Every structure is written in structure tokens, then in C-alpha cells.
Length: 119
Image 1: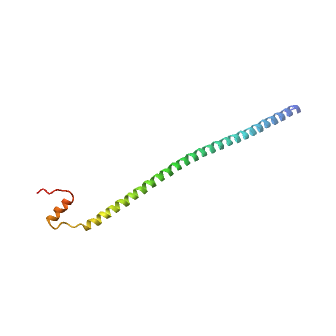
Image 2: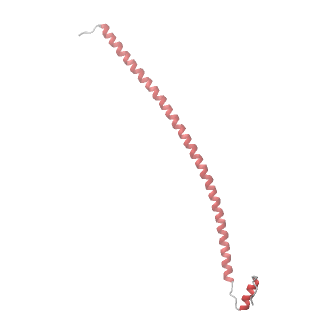
């Protein structure tokens, strides 16, 4: 079966139109995917910025807590040094204390502390 020239021309036109529609579809899909990629990039950049701000806030909170803990540590170190000095003073005084040799010495010590004798 032989087709006429007009039929073959119609077929050629139909094929060309189909190819053109196919090409238009590919081009439209390409631009649509470019827009999708740009949108995804914007979303990713926004998420990165929000995460970055959140991390910076957390870092500033941690820095303030570190400063507070450092001050508390310095205060505790000062207290420790004070108590060490008190302990050392008491230890040195303890070495110089001698027990009373007689009961009259003991009575004098109690009277010096403000206790009155009973007899």
C-alpha cells in the first residue's frame, strides 16, 4: 500500500509537531526543575541561618554559664585558702598548748575563761 504524497506530508507534519511538543515539554521541565532547585537552595540557606543563630545563642548561654562557674570556683578557692590558713593556725597553736601541771593552774585557766569555781 502506497501512501499519497499528501498523506506522507501529513505524517511528517504530525511527527514534527509531536517532536516539537516533546521538545517543549523537555524545556518546560528543565525550567521547572531549575525553579525547584532554586527553591530548595533558598530553603536550605534559611535552615542553615536559623540553625546558625540557634547555635550562636546556645554558645552565648554556655559562655555566660562558664563565667558564672569560674567565679564560683574562684570564690570556693578563696574559701578553701581561708580554711587552710585557719586550720594551719589551729595546728600551730595546738602544738604550743601545754597541759596544766597543777590543779591551781587548771583553776586559773577556767577562771580566765569566765567560769566561777564551785567550792
